[in-house]
Length: 129
Image (cartoon, rainbow, N blue to C red):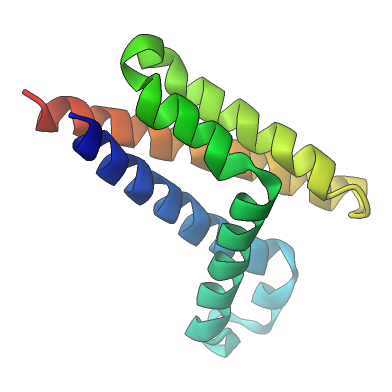
């Protein structure tokens, strides 16, 4: 069971980083040039940067604690916990961003973390039946 939780947790966080990489590209203004002008490598680079942020800020460690170890105990609350942790960790890391961009990125990140955690919980429930 712990191995399945680890696999689902890893996929959840990879998907969160990939989606937030796309959001970072859009919020960064690169989408104004048109979708054909954005190289696919840039989206992957933005996603890799977000994975490094997740490692460096401690987000992955705190989410791992709730997502892998306590997932059975916190159950339905885990998507809200993941969203809240994403929001809180970004609060400390984005202190020099302008307020509009910061709130947009935090809100989209919290929603993405919530949706990925919810989908992961649904998949884990189906997988363990």
